[in-house]
Image (cartoon, rainbow, N blue to C red; front, side):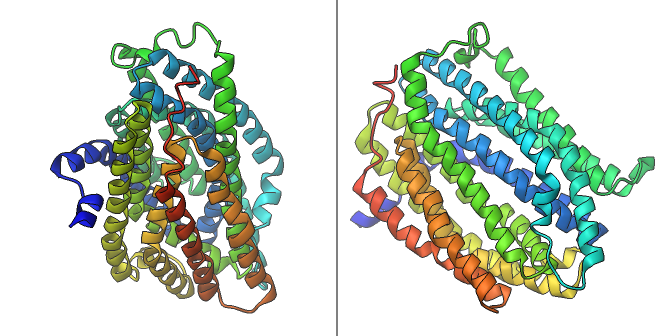
Length: 464
């Protein structure tokens, strides 16, 4: 009974959690669902087009998560500043996000424009498939050059959306996300297939639709924030001065730099893992693209719960409610993991159905179904790891999260994938399963760190 009370909250608790988490789930869910439809639309055109886009999106993920890491370091402080009612502190953390994100934007545009072709080529393997590989390269380059135009609105939207969420406003980002994905979906239909008299642009049409939708999303959150300054006091005068207190900037850099480096290394590590899997051929790349797209739709629960943990627990720590923060965190983790047992079961049972929607080979469809089953089986592990990561991050333990996340990936997962892909003849399915199962070790580490309470700290008292 004591264990039940420890893991399960009352009705008011879940009402509070769902108030924060559901809008994030809805936004992420709709985004990923439209991403699924987008993926299916391109997949209906051909395997080479789908593979080219999948490779570019893997590279784009490195940039996207670099931005996420950069603003998350400041976001730890934003949540705690908001928890203690310090709107000036939130304003300063917002400015920090602007500076660091624009710096990363310039770096990202340079790297992707100068080295994009060579990066795509790293993923193209397969004997006797030269024509298909060349086609995938051309489609990938076309998609990449257009997607570069969408990096600026993505950066601005992330800066505003993250701060709104840290201040407890999750509905506006959700509405902006819904509007953006609807625009993206309609434009995909019009531009990929040339519907209603529009030009049939294929891969280029998918990229144009995504870029336009990003401008729509950024415009909505930015305009709303500046028009509702009474509800969001941090935005008042945010651009009148670029000054950030030196002590705060130093604290954000101290705690935020490991988080930013972690996201860069983690996303780069995931790209390296994909490259290891790509050694098994273009079919593996296409099948993993299908699997990842499908899994992302179902992963929205534990992804949103991670964001909820960072917001709710961060605000409690900022308010000095340490015991309540620990109790709340335990129940949030339990809710996330239990939910994923049910969701994973549904995904395992429905795995063979999703690849049938794609116009690709039977081999790719069979591989994709197996990848989906493995991802579903490992979903509770992923939920616990994700929740543990955000728990540690909420208390400013960014060096610990760096060791827990990226160091583990580069020192354990990547060497395993590299060795199995290069030095054995292991088929792609058992190879992929072995690389996923190694996360059990990470779960044990996360459990120990969370249970010891190394994350229970108020970090804004000395940062003001």
